[in-house]
Image (cartoon, rainbow, N blue to C red; front, top):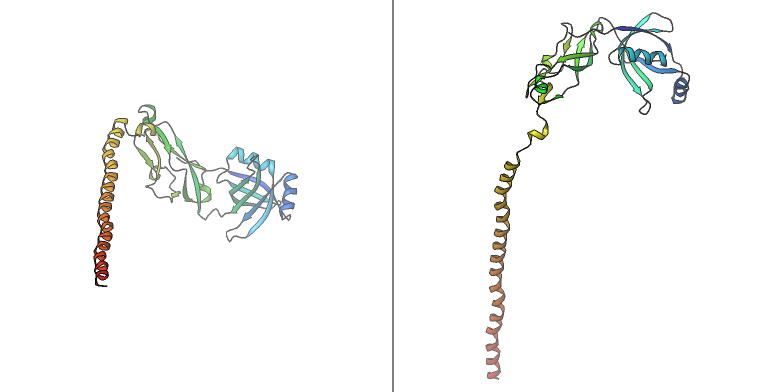
Length: 254
């Protein structure tokens, strides 16, 4: 059964500093810039202690975290961690986006799928396991948000699959991804699925006469077309010879 996500408390401060230069200075001072969006899309720039935030993410995981964000010492605000931008070289956090949520309003989130166990088709039948789908969309209340959905694949045999409909969720969680989509399957390695060499040779032999026939037919047609044109060339001298006697008759009359 899916495990509910823990809610974490974290302190934040409003961030009056805007612009790339100000943000760079904040990062150098140990702050992590962030933006909180409300249900209407209105944004509020804030900042977190970067070290504390990174430790929190390492401990609890970085997906679908619900935080009790205490802004400038005020009452805690429920927010959902939506996105984390990282440095591609050092993997440092650069910026985070959060969404203000209501505990009584359902959300749609992407939840990761984690495969559990070793399939029979792999351990006993020589196949390989392939995960075809990594996440599904789930609708639920914030209290029922989860980081991942486990899927037991240990009973999978060769050439069998498990689908979205096989995922186990809480009654309060609705999977919106279509149930017929395959999540994982077991099949033989690609090298063993190729055609046998003997079958490939037979296919090549069957295709050889067809390859030789086309040039022969083309050559015959070309020869026939050439033979048909040659008499037309011989007809011109014959016509010329037919005119010469008429010229001689005229001279004789003179």
